[in-house]
Figure 1 (cartoon, one colour):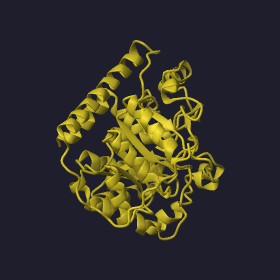
Figure 2 (tube, one colour):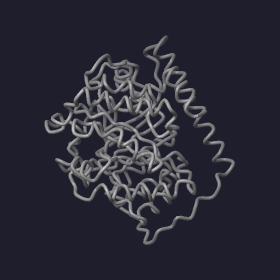
Figure 3 (cartoon, helix red, strand yellow):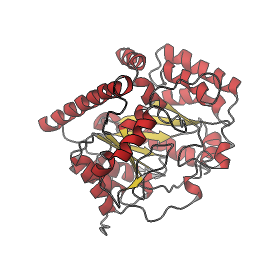
Length: 378
């Protein structure tokens, strides 16, 4: 496939979208029912039928592995990935996901927005009926014009990476002077449009040896910006983070970590809605080797289909793809015996233990669901 058509929009257009149609509201309700059914089937898989095949419902789409920052916690910028999927190939992938009944698409990278045709890919997903479209970004290129383009394409939730409460810390982690101010401006820009577009905004902070003591200040920043704070856990086992220099930044001091988490836990207990749940916070020390690690089944590996920038599919954050969409269809992969066997193993945590999306895994447990519901009711 050689289609390289790219739509360039020349001016910001922040016109709020029209109210959802009855058909769109019905689609949203059905998607929620399918997610509830998915969790019920996972419970059956865990306790009764370990070989039960449960199809994924969310796709993590790596539009590119390349990036415009040089983060000490990441490996993707140290090499340049070539021969990534074309616009036509991404459209084909999205068509297949729509036909299989996927309910959500997450667009990520590298930095997804360094692809000039990123919004054309997203717009195609919108045209195929997807209403839950999410973007992971560092915010560097998300100026007024680009944000308008992203919103027009259909993105309604954002994760924006911020690795320190000040320019000094964030810029040192991200490897670029001035990155902090640009990224914070992008967050403020998104928040300003939140009510008009029904946006969800989350600030993602990666816990590392050099910034762990600044967690309370990050909580203050989240409150100031009025966004949720999510704590990524530094790791060198996932496919974008395997590098000795990344490993060198993971020697977190236990006393600093526990002191910072104690502050956040107290604030979370008092009802600070911007912070992770107490259950999430208590998981973190075990990830870094301090105390017992709660090895709950990996819902993440079952819920999400990983589609890499060069067509690789399968595995998860900690395990490389096993198949390629340039050779097989999505349906033949996810319904094939190899994929089913691989993901049964990943579900029971027979894996490298990456810690990715630990919050999702915890929230899928009865206690996690109860805590999340309690926070909503507050």
